[in-house]
Length: 527
Image (cartoon, rainbow, N blue to C red; front, side, top):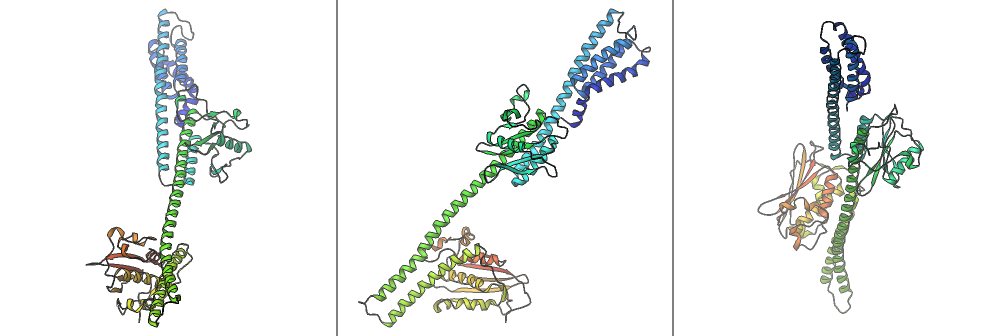
């Protein structure tokens, strides 16, 4: 019901009395010029007018007053309630009956119109609040919006939402901004009681009203039944879900301390239920996220153990076998044979060191403990230091195509060396005996570097997956080396440098790993 309709209903009897008096004063000068029956029609208009403004009861009062006024002022003998003609009694009684019927029918139409408007407003409010809740908002945003909607409905001076804290007790989460909310001990006690018992306090009694069929009405008790003495014009609503108690919505007194109507209480219950559903959905989302995180951690742990057990155990077993053979006294070793065994031992040590280094690098990068120290370097300088770590037979397979005017790049030298090392190691590993090409180019905005191999290439479905931790492509089935961490470390380092990396398949076969870095010093080129 609108505020205007409420105001008219509140002063309905005064309106009925005023309109009848004013109409009588207006009609009185013309009683000698019109027939007495014609004034009844004018009074019926007044009754209908009052009914359309103020409802049934004021209209009935208007009908009774009109009956008396017509009799007293317009039916002979005038200015007395006596009636000379018996036919006039019949007219008066018919007038009263018709006036009552018009008042009832018109008043009911008005009340139904007010109820329809109230339902429309209620539906719009609920649709607005529901649409707001399905969007991606936080619990704080929901609480502030809920308080704003409840304030618009009730005009209460203090509204607060209580949610369980870390200890499981209801604590104030949000309240009416700018209002002085008196946190009397009785309010806190009632909130805790409602949270524990899951029963509403302060709702109007609907047992004898049409709203008694409202299925959303929670179990309600009076203030006296709680055993806690407090104001009686407050409402405490539990936010009950199917699995738990989500919180308590508190609606304080109004400034005029007027009681809340059933219509207002029904709206509050619906809003509280929607807020409870939202909180339950967020609670289930948190549980699902935690479950996914735990599952991912278990999967990562299993993958890590599998990778580490293979990549660490395999070279250790090989080194143990080599050392055992060298220590055997029944075998005569020549210098060349010993050198070959030591070289194999060195290769296993390098492989073991690379695997452990990748694990350490990735953990430092993800923890933001290995922050790049940016300086300007020649790309060829960094590449030369990387090539020194590879055996001569592998260096011979790498071909270069670097322009003379290639500008310096602003990078962390050790980190960028690690990037190039992983890319070259990966290309040499998957190319077999084919050559590997390294190139670079520059534009006004960026510097591009690439490493190209002639291996089996990367399938379109794996272009992004190869940069994930512990992922090894389908073409790695016949490769018995690698933890699946090299490209993941590479991707993290490039991201820290503000660049990006992607893969391009080349024809007839092979893959090109392309790195793009923003050009921060376009005019300076390498010498």
